[in-house]
Image (spheres, rainbow over the protein chains, first blue to last red):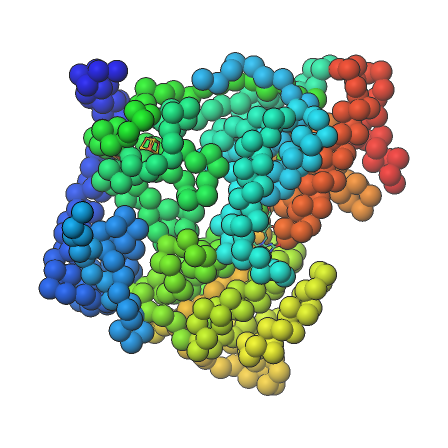
Length: 96
Length: 447
Ligand SMILES: Cc1cc2nc3c(=O)[nH]c(=O)nc-3n(C[C@H](O)[C@H](O)[C@H](O)COP(=O)(O)OP(=O)(O)OC[C@H]3O[C@@H](n4cnc5c(N)ncnc54)[C@H](O)[C@@H]3O)c2cc1C
Ligand code: SF4
Ligand code: SF4
């Protein structure tokens, strides 16, 4: 399929799946906002999940889910423990 | 491209350990088998577990070779993400209408590299990790999935096309449609497995609303090296727990839930998990609240004794209620039977519910096979032919027949294959009417 045909197929399918696409787009918006806030909380240095929850105002179980998802996809890395909690930081850009 | 019609000796429905074992046992004897699994990967619950009692073998290490043996066996045709929608019977056997659901990925070219997953912007709670971890809308089911192929979760997809641009093999295909096809077989083995007590079943235990009251399958994932956190941590805030309690029979032997039977595995998996936690968190206190401990299998009682010797606290007590304090710590209200039935409240960091095994599939509408009173597939001659259903030519394997552990699932899987093979031989050459040793006749012969 050419690039153009692909774009057209996607456009047609977006029309066909209007409702789920609208719902998923709203979800994406929320996820992007939360990831941005979490990233901001981590910009100044490593933090635990309750600390990120305090800084962002999000429920701590919610932060836990986002941090674990971001860790899985390489956006966040885990550091040593601070008392009973692990600390997390933004993945450092590694020189290639 | 799926063929429109295939012909095999036996159709196996369900690709957990029981279905895989039944398929392999028949295929090794030279019978042609079609294995149909509704999920995108085979493996069932077993591939989700951390380690298995009583040997503490790594579950992934013993399940993965079985999964790939199924995928590579020359006598097995494997259909994942596929369901049986209807069957008809004729004098040749069964004709099953199967439906291949679209993965929106070309499985012939996909290499399982997960580039699409990294490119996709949407995170989705992952059922494999009991929703504590995430996959993307484009994803490979899990690291040891068979087949190791991606699929797209259309329910959460925005059709942005990033996965397609990220795929080096050009495998994303949004034009895929459902594909109906037919499977002709002379026998069928049902291996549809079980499900666990739903989280909201017990209102007294928080009805699934407390983040630190989890089911035992969650704990399996937390203990697995590939789990959602990589450690045992509390879902509410990531704290490493100091004190973990198990509540036994949380969903079994419970008239209020209509589940009067014992699920047979919960005592053993709780003891197993307690041992694994004390290995992972040597300083943690672990308590098991139980009514009675049932460790009936080979080597199982020694396992229990080892756990006691390791310092795991076994408390004979009835847990009436679980509440939560202001720090999301579960508070267990328990009647201490060995202390004159005194009622006490004890706080823990986490509580694990030893949930029961429930039937997950009613084969009556499609396969014409009735379930027993407990909801599991009815086997009229339970003592003599535990895998023979009422319906000639249809057999049952593993936990579809009732609660049991992996050892027993494998034993029953072998028995179901032997019954199916005997049935195929007795009805050889498609002339079912000539030698009519039906299931009913076999049941009477055994009895
Ligand atoms: C928390 C926990 C811990 C456990 N730990 C242990 C342990 O340490 N040792 C041990 O021996 N046992 C353990 N068990 C028990 C063990 O999980 C089961 O004995 C075993 O997994 C049963 O396998 P199965 O194939 O019968 O069922 P399942 O694993 O449930 O497999 C059934 C398969 O059929 C598929 N399916 C269902 N319906 C359909 C359909 N209509 N069409 C197509 N496919 C379908 C499902 O998707 C699934 O893949 C544990 C159980 C739990 C809950
Ligand atoms: S679809 Fe493409 S990117 Fe995704 S796993 Fe398959 S080959 Fe890799
Ligand atoms: S098209 Fe769907 S699956 Fe692909 S990247 Fe976009 S949201 Fe993810």
